[in-house]
Amino acid sequence: MIYEVTQFGLPKNIAAGVTEALRQMQPGDTLHFPKGEYHFYKDYCQSLVVHTSNTDSFQRPKKTFGILLQDKEQLTLDGDGSVFVFHGNISALGVLRCRQITLRNFTIRYACPTNVELEVTAKQGHTVSYRVPENQPFYMDGGSVIFFEQSPFTKKNYWQMRNNENSSCAVRHQGETVFREVDQPFSGLHRTRRTGARTFDVWSLRKKKYQIGETVALSMNNCRETAGAFFSESSDLAVAQVTVNYLHGFGWLTQMCRDVSFTGVHFHPDSQHHVSSFADCIHVCGCKGTVTIKDCSFTQAHDDAINIHGVFLRFVRRVDDHTAVFQFVHRQQGGYRAFFPGDTVRFYYRSSLQPCGEENIVAAAEDDIDAKTCTLTFDRPLPEDIGAKFRGQQNVVIENASYCPNVEISGCSIHGIPTRGILCTSGGHVDIHHNTFEHVFMANVFVSNDANDWYESGPVRDMQIHHNVFHLPTLRQKRSWPTLAAVLVEPITLGGKITAPVHSGIRIFENEITLTDGYALWSKGGGDIEIDDKDHPVHIEPLDK
Figure (spheres, rainbow, N blue to C red):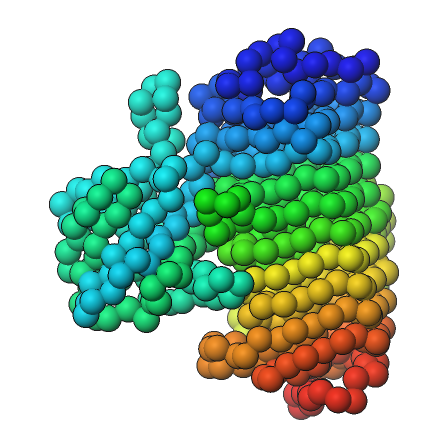
């Protein structure tokens, strides 16, 4: 059955109508949006407590979703070319505990993006003149500039920011070039002056490097309150022909799902803005089956275009020979179920990322969400060395080997990204091919495996990187990121040393690479890497002794 969304509400305020339509829908139904512009206000959207990986979820557990599907199956949401406009600092989409969901044919846009963009219109001495987009209100408060978005219903602010209080750095947009800048527009602030409806001047104690005509955006990564769109504990999800002009929060997060595809999804800002995503574009954490990203484009986001990984939990204590407690460590990790009965697990030493004992099978899992821990009981005894320590820290982590998907990333364009193009660490078959990378200012493809910082697992065993086009930019910040490479292989261990190969089965062939700085390949801990490039620098770092 096809449901017309206009039967449930008016396009100018459609959130409650969409909620009611989804409530009535049954397996096999389609929710159709006649082509137009539909507005979703935070005031009328659904909220719930749910934790999203790689965000400040425990500080901000309550999330609000423009469109929310929970415990549904075999549904299609067809936008028919419509534009969905979201008002407020909310997630555009949420799909929780669903199966066989298709989302297609629409554009995601925010009425007032939470990444404040400042166009440099003039410079004189220590003074810079800025202009904001038409839909970005602000007011002056003493010597500060307050940016905000206000509810038309309550007249209260959905969000506000004083100067750059929630911004971790500035991101400079110079045409197709996008790169991070440590010096913020308001750092060293002396005084400000409003000069027009959309313009103001900032006097700083030191001169800014900015150029007239470029846009300096405030990177909001310092406050990751939610995910821009969120899939959780769902299977057979397909996103097709969707344009993302902007996503508030931490990109499109797919967490503990099975069989997910993104086809013809384009992260591209609208004509009035320069920023397409608050942080990452597509972020996949702890999935299984197959993850497919095909014929997509990524441009002008404020963090990585694609990041696919598992998660390491650190050993806490032994309960008995078959049972132990493990914990999410990073402050922006945890709050969700990472293991299920029947899952295969692997143990690793943090100091080397080498296996600790043999694989095991989860017999029972008990989660303490608030404590960010889970108690796991296994079919076989725990590794004898599971309580080992290194430099006074617990040295063993656990990975869910059942949630290491096969990955295909093909036909994609990754352009104007200030950080990494593709991060991928999965023990499944990984095929990265026929993609184009341009103006990506850190590693274009990064194979990490991290047991000390973000705790993003795991070892790669079968990865092909082929028939891609890499145009590496001139390196801007050699001290902060000295290893610009088309492909960077660099695991992160406790202590920083790599004494034995961590990854294996990586084959790099028939790529087109142009560079003035950097490497075709920079690798440490990569094991048996094969690369056919003989025209560009290749660096294999020796293992630590």
